[in-house]
Image (cartoon, rainbow, N blue to C red):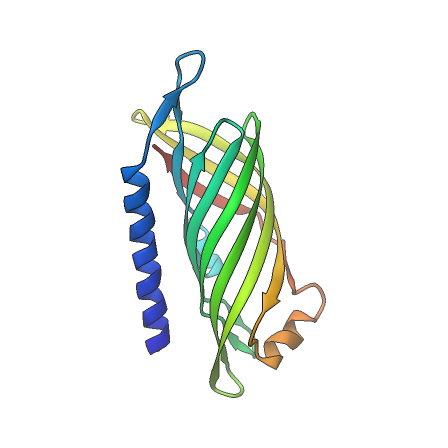
Length: 193
């Protein structure tokens, strides 16, 4: 429990750091027609309570086609008859916008994972490295002249490296296609500034 509280404290600190940094350096530009382009955005997923993956992503647009993605995530995913992950992660990614709301992105997740193995009643500390490809659509609109968006994405992700994962988690991962993450459409809501 002490490790989980420590992870949650670090997670809260990183969120505050990203929010403060993005507000300090936020800027906007005008396109050729004089329309305002917002170069910064923050997004979260309303699906988090259902997926047990909580996170916040900050995006910086270099231009209309290229975005840098930075963020933090906390994953507490139960594995039936095996245990639960308690993973704190950074998010580093790139998004390519194709126009008309369509985009593709790639993210990498360096992760500190604290696996709890139910049968052994033991925690395993591990460094994991995940990656994920996403293809999606973003719908931009305003609420009271405030720019917001809703985004739907189809993901495909898998682990590149898992350090000290318990054997029961490895066995579960090797059953069928459990090592891949692709079975849900992800939904995000966000603000631009």
